[in-house]
Length: 337
Ligand code: ADP
Ligand code: MG
Image (tube, rainbow, N blue to C red):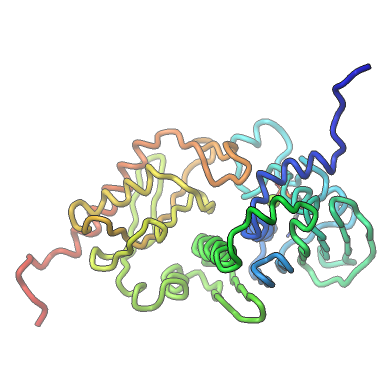
C-alpha cells in the first residue's frame, strides 16, 4: 500500500503558516502590505491584546471582486503575478499568495470587501469558509483576525510577553509608515491610539511623528545616485545617536528589508564621527530596477538578494559621508555665538 499522500490543503496551509505567520506582528505586516498593494490611501490598524484577541486592518483600496473572494484564501492564489517573467520584476509587496490562507488556517478571519459596487463578507474559520454573503458597498477591504493561534497551542506558547509582541507590531507599522509617507496610517491598541500619520507625503513629518520632533530636527535629507541605484531619505547628525542599530530603516523599492551590509555601509558613511557603540537614526530609501533584486529568498520577503550590492554599499557610504561633510563647515573649536 502506498505510504505517500498529498496533505489536505488546510494542513499544508498550517505548515506554511509556520513561516509566514510567526507572531501577531507578521499578521499585521501581511495585511498592511496587501492594503498597500491595493493602492490604499488610508490604512487603519486596530489591535486588541497585542493582536491575540483581534487584529483589524481597514483600507480604502481597490477591494476584491466577489468572484475572487474565495480564491483569495487559496494557497498560491494571487492577483499580483502570472508567469515566470513577472517573478523577476516584482513591483508589489506580495506575490506568493500565501498570507490569507496561512492566517486563516491558524485563526478566525472575517473579510469584508468591495470594489465599490456590491460588497462581500467571507467568514473563514481555521481555513474553512463558513459564510459567504453580500455586504456593505464601501470601497475597500476590512480583514479582521480573531483568536490567532487558538488552534496552535505550541505557537501560542512560543510568543513573548504581550508588551514585546505589541512592540513588534508598533515597530513594523512604524517602518511601513516610513516607507509610505503618502499613505495615512493609524494604529490603535486596546482603544488607545499609538501612532498616526497624515499621508501628506512629507517623510520628515512621518519621522517626527515616530521618533519625535526634536529628533527629526536633527536629521538631514540625503540624496545620491549612480546608473543602477537611487538613494534618498534622512539620517541623523552625529550628535543624535542611539545605542542600537534598530533605528536604521532600509527600504528597498518600498519594502522594509533586513540587510546587514547596507546598514554597515550607512554607518561607515559617518566615518569616525560616531562614538563606539552608538548608531544613527536613519531612513534610507533605495530605488532600483526590480530585475536587479531577488525578493523571493524567504517567505517573509524581508531578506533579499541584490546584485551589485558592493556598488550600492559604496553609493550609500559616499552619499552620507558627503552630506555630513557639508554640516562640518565650522572647524572644531569654534562654538556657536
Ligand atoms: P499575495 O499578497 O501574495 O497576492 P495574499 O494571500 O496576501 O497573497 O492575498 C491574496 C490575494 O487577495 C491578493 O493577491 C489580492 O488579490 C487579494 N487581497 C488581499 N488583501 C487585499 C486587500 N486588502 N485589498 C485588495 N485585495 C486584497
Ligand atoms: Mg499578501
